[in-house]
Length: 84
Image (cartoon, rainbow, N blue to C red; front, side, top):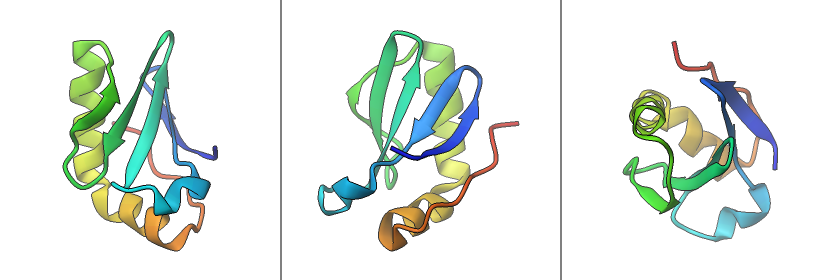
């Protein structure tokens, strides 16, 4: 899976093969934690993260929702700015 961003000890990726597998989502790995997050809602589809990282990734998804949906729909790989 291509890594589209990394920050706060989290690796964010998207599996282009899963494009047909809705809802549009990203995968996040942080140490022994991993989760899948719906791009449209920012809600966790499966898995979990520590509370502070959960808050950070939800804010990041909200800020970059348009770019994330572009990647999902076009399957064009682009890197997205890390959380600041």
